[in-house]
Every structure is written in structure tokens, then in C-alpha cells.
Image (cartoon, rainbow, N blue to C red; front, side):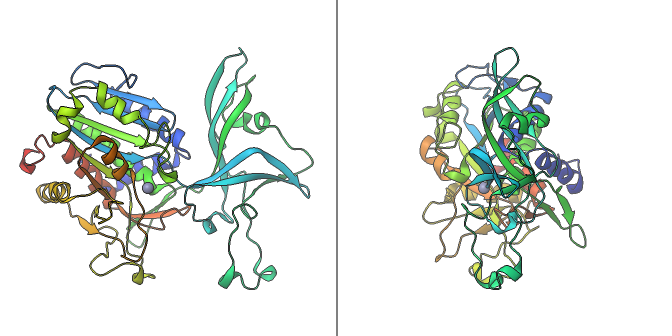
Length: 428
Ligand SMILES: [Zn+2]
């Protein structure tokens, strides 16, 4: 990781994002990378040998670890999330409207709705099918090309559009897929995109996603423009950190958890408020109750970079900017889980590794978003830090990150994994 340029690092990051239109695709790609590095698939309730490279996959979540070599060694935990706000088919979604084939959708998470209009949209997701042999299997599918859109209403039909237009999620976001007299079944619709001959769809998650490839932009290539940077950027940085750190594993356990459902509150079997991570820690080495004091969690999720057109949205001395380093996120009301001990640990680590860091708190008169950090901290009782790359346009169909920050974040997380004494940063 240290031996590649930021450009090479970012090209791989953007390839990962473009190949991961849904949380299930992201997990598929994370698992492929883990298997390529020798990680073995196990169950959360298995007990691997000390020092094993293992992972457990559960729908839109994955937990990967190098288990502790020593039963009393603590854990270095890094968490991120695989899901991003998007539009998803309702049941019985397909219908005809005046000769247009439409799909009714629900919004998933805190969607910024305006950017979904006039985009080239693909469809991807997972389908549970009964196959030709009668077995029930889950398949991933991806149209890999634009097959849908949500057209804007022309300004001539709404003269107040630039002042007063609001978007009604029920009425205005339904997808337009084609023209004709026929409504295909879900099996017919999804068949060319990843199903096998003889499959019949019993149930599916169908997500719309913008197909436009990610890009590197700016006069000097300063920025990455991509969908789902929140939070596939952090999943990728965490993965690179774990793979690099695992080459020189020490006594402590190193773990990466990528949860689904952060954008809708994390309460699910594979969300941070579910049982997955605690189950792994109970079985994967050491006595968690004993080692929790020597353990630490880093919750990696993007931060709000200062928007140059909306500088009043940030308060004094909180103007974090793109390409100035990962952001340590602080909230007095514990919407971010950072506390002085974990902040100090990371500040010292940044100094030791010569990686710039920024610190951020939200405006006091604005509600603060949250992350998996406070949820994991309260479930596991582990001291936690919230950190993330500064970005523009969080939850838009295209978000922006600085070209330097993702690799810095990965290098910092790698250094964190290698910390065998949380109080001694020079122990890296
Ligand atoms: Zn996020």
C-alpha cells in the first residue's frame, strides 16, 4: 500500500466502487480480495486457531480478522458500512402508465433526491430464486448499463421550479424503464442480468444506481467523483489496511467489520446494532470481557468537507477541507463516539506516521449525523474513535473526495492495526 502512488491507490478504489453497486456486491468484492490474500471462510461461532486469517460473510456484511496470537492480547477493530442511500423496488413494483413501463420505488436511507433525476440508472441487487433443479439459491444481478431514468419536469410546466420545487418520494421518483404494452415478470426482467436458465425469482432486492463511471477530476486531478464514497471509501481503506497489516501480524487481533444498514439505523441481523460482531469476538480468540480494556475500535465513515459555496454551514475552526487529511469527528452528545483517550491515540499515531489529521464538530445549531461508532461502542463496551475522509455532497448520487485522503486513511488504519500497545504510539 505504501509503495503505490495515490493515483494507483485511487484507481483501485474507484474500480471497487464501480463494481459494487449494492451492499451485496460490495461484500462479494471484499470477500474475493480476502480470499485472494488467503483468508478462510468460517462461521461466527467457529473457533479458529490463534493467528488465523478468517472471515464470515452474512448478506450485506462481512467480518474479517487475523485472530490474536495470544489469548490475553486485545483487538484492533475497524468498522465501516457497505450500504448507501438509494432507490429500491417495492413489491409488485412494475406497472404501466400511459404506455410507459414504470417501477415504483421506496427511498432507502437519507436520499438526497434531486440528483436522481435525469441520470442514467442501472438496476442491481440480489434475488432468491428456485433454480432448474428445484434448489433455492441467492444470486447477484447487475444490468451493467443504463436501463432506467427519472425524468425531471420541464421548467415550462413548473415556473417556480428553482424556488419552490419539492420532491415527493411517492409520486416523483418512480423509474421509467421502457415503452410498450407488456409488464414483464421479475424473473423475465432480471434474467439477462445474472440469473441462470430455469431460475424463477421468489423474492428480490432491486436497487437503482447511477451507471456513470467514477472519475478523477480537477485542474490537477485533485478530486475523486464517485457514487457511494459514503462509505465504500472506508470499506476499501479498511480492507487495504488489514491486508497490509496482516503481512506483519503481531500478538493483537486485527478485525475489519463492514456492516449493512447503517443508513437506516443499523438495527438488523447484519447491522452494527445486530449480533454479528459480538458473536465473532466471543469465539475468535481471547476472553472479550478480559481484553476489552486493551482493545479499541475505529469507526471509519466520511466527514463533511467545508463547501466553498456554503461556508456558513460550518462553525469557527471546524472548516475541514479536502486533501488535508482524515478527519477526527467529535460530538459532545456522542453522535460520534470519539473520546479524549482515543483521539489522543490517533493524534499521536498521525504524528508518528507523518499523516496530517483534521478535527471536526458540527454546528451546534444543526443536528449531527451518526455512524456505527456509538452503536458498536455501546454494544461492546469498547473505546471508540470516529474518523473519515472529508467529502462534498454526502448522500448524493455522486460524491466528491480529495485524492490524497483515501490512502492516508488506509495508512493510518494500517498503523492502528499494528499498534500493540494503545498507550505507546511508538510501538507501531
Ligand atoms: Zn456513512
